[in-house]
Image (cartoon, rainbow, N blue to C red; front, side):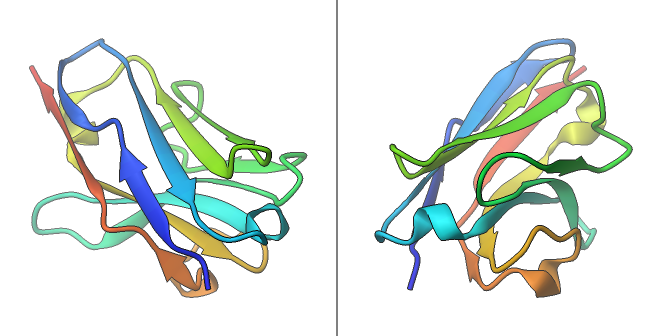
Length: 122
């Protein structure tokens, strides 16, 4: 079992930055691939970024490439999402997730956090 708790969301103006954190419980954090997803109002939950268990591989949705960076610190059982050049369309609830392998669909992840709200004003 892995429990995930996100933090770092908030209200920011367009062009600003936020860093989300996801703290994981359990001694097996380093064996899981981690992902960030988001759900905008009235839309489905979609993939944002993912990182392999070692941090050696990453994947990004086209909409965030060049603006968002995912990273992890296995010693701290934490995964991060640095979000720069934020746009109003980035407004969503952001979720972190843990899975057996790096993937881009929500069905590939087994454990989920409760989400953190990110609101970008224009």
